[in-house]
Image (cartoon, rainbow over all chains, first blue to last red; front, side):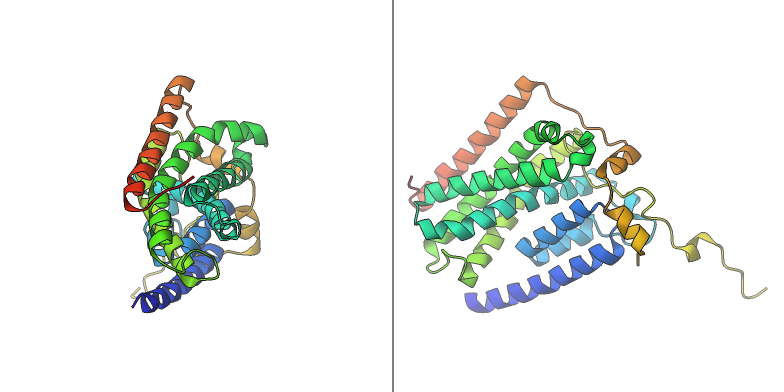
Length: 234
Length: 59
């Protein structure tokens, strides 16, 4: 039964990723950093990521993105996706490599935490947001350290129990060669995202972390909408 | 569908976007930030401790 559930999950994930990539390229009006974040999160969380993309980031109609994403709840969701993409990327990479070393599960979790933190802070926060800090990388690291640390801690608060329990109880799901490994990592990422949402909301509501922004002049109303059409009855 | 110029703009500087939106970030006082970080670490360790009731967590 679990095998069948995994087949359905991976099929839904493939469809979700294709949709989010397509929409990001042809309908995206946010920075490329934000688009990559949503694509990565959809790879890790499948249809759940695609659902939240539709809910919080996808431009429903030309000229509507700013208004559509204005609510703090949506800003927080976009902010969290940025964080989750960075953290989960480091965690996935570490979790894929660590089985080779046959460490204890406590050390596995510790190294995964460090990998997620390094990926999240030094690449996804500081490097990709360097434009926000006049091109000063270490200033970007310093300014984003607090938001990244508390977000990462909450993401791992959700992920660690799921990773450890499923890794121990689900025989054969320890290594990246098994589909069940990717399935249980997906479940862990979803739980991590849910647990981290409240802190993300608090950070964005208090302007301690950026939300989702439309690129300047990227989202204009479609030309047909801007010009009133002549009444055909006249 | 967005054109090439639009795509180039989309891949451009994040700085311009932040200026456009006036998304200047605030900072917490260092002491308060440190307390919040410690609290989140405590929550993380509590989750690890609770997990150890379900499965053995070894270092």
